[in-house]
Image (tube, rainbow, N blue to C red):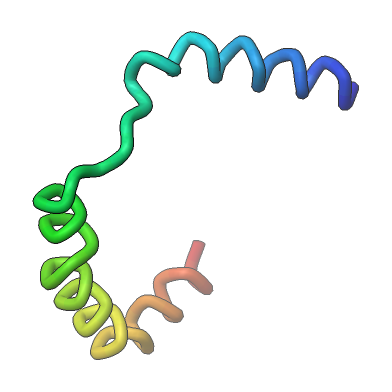
Length: 57
């Protein structure tokens, strides 16, 4: 089973290789910079709500 899993991962990876590119500085700042900081702040503020939702599933 493990060998099948690795073969599937390799095949899948090669199909996506043309789409995988490093982020440039602007993209990094957009998704992981200030916007990411804002998302982290919101998640911290709503941590109790997120825990209740997770337990509910």
